[in-house]
Image 1 (tube, one colour):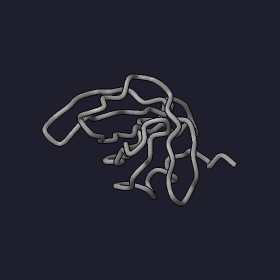
Image 2: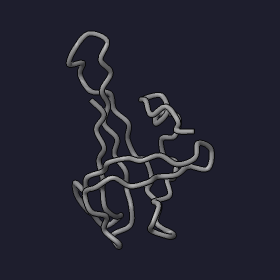
Image 3: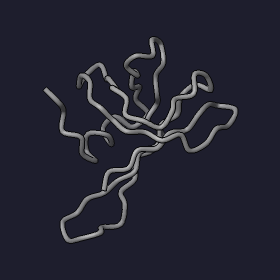
Image 4: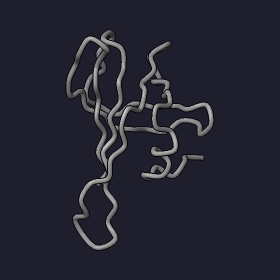
Length: 94
């Protein structure tokens, strides 16, 4: 069963690890979960930032991510930068 992918789901897993399906041994760390300004009444958008290893660099696409406590789910991520600590990826829910 697919978990409810809302802000609360990710905020509860801030600094947690997400395994990347199809890339054995590659994990992403959720480094930020930020609410976005509302676009409409009742709308809750948010941005997620992940950090992963420098290699392999993941392409912009949908990956099957997994957590130990919530199972797996698809998530579209975009590489947005790199530094000495690794690659940064973003996912936006709007």
